[in-house]
Image 1 (spheres, rainbow, N blue to C red):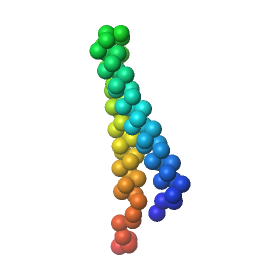
Image 2: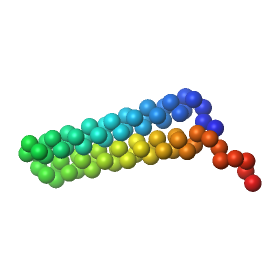
Image 3: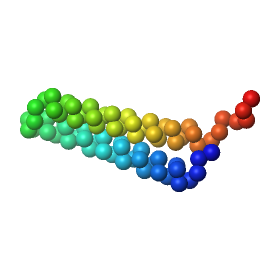
Image 4: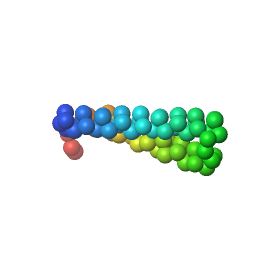
Length: 74
């Protein structure tokens, strides 16, 4: 079982990653829409943002499923 400090730390990391990823995707869409940067650059920034969102969701998923043991070992 995880202690409360570890769960809190992982939740903060998950939230930070998701928020940073959404911010990067939003920035990439805005810059691309205004034509301020090359398409390849905005695509790369959007991909990095998507990876951050995916990582944050994964960390949150692990917190949810590691919160309780499956039962006694057989």
